Amino acid sequence: MRKTILVAMAIMLCSSAFCADIDTLKTRAEQGDESAQFYLGRAHSTGEGVLQDYKEAVKWYRKAAEQGHALAQAGLGSAYSVGKGVPQDYKEAAKWHLKAAEQGHAAAQFVLGCAYSNGKGVPQDNKESVKWYRKSAEQGNASAQSALGLAYRDGRGIPQDYAEAYFWLNLASSQDEGSAKGRDEVAAKLTRGKLEEVQAKCKKWVEDFEKRKR
Image 1: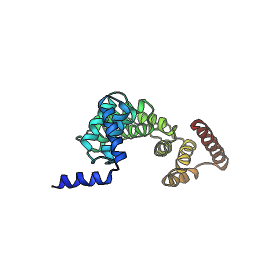
Image 2 (image 1 turned 60 degrees about the vertical axis):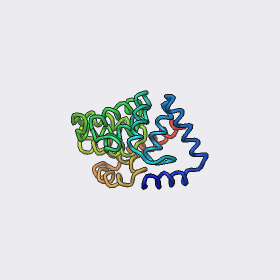
Image 3 (image 1 turned 135 degrees about the vertical axis):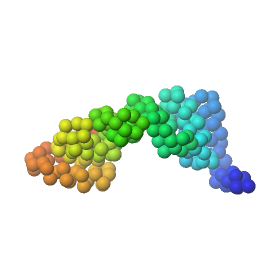
């Protein structure tokens, strides 16, 4: 009875045009279109246009991921990481995040950096953690910039360098206010001249980054 009510609600909430789009998406996904498979998986994950079903989401993410779709690989990795639609498995999570990270997926690179930092699904390795944080940070991921800054501050996986710590924490703070405290603590360890030098470096990095995005 409850399932019948949920189906009825889904039909009421779904416009005919959107449902038609979902039907088209499913047809394309069944024909092997990796992008359609990913978007169908995401629809099932969020419940957009279909009933939310994490197992069905994983099914379509996997089909796309096995064809090399980076977003699907990251989605499948996240599913394994939190145990939604599949049993929680950190090794499988790291495996799929690595595949996405190697294709340049910034969020997957950050998550992989965290995995190496914490030793979840992979051997604990601070140097490898910093490697992936950096790749993500250079793409503008604020969480990775903050993590890289803290690694420089603490000398974890990389030689301690307060100027570099400030550089990355300052970049992160423009998107994430939570990084400002760490940035200010590191700033107190720099001379005024060095601080101004790093701030100028930050400004240039942002300008160059914005140009690359155009």
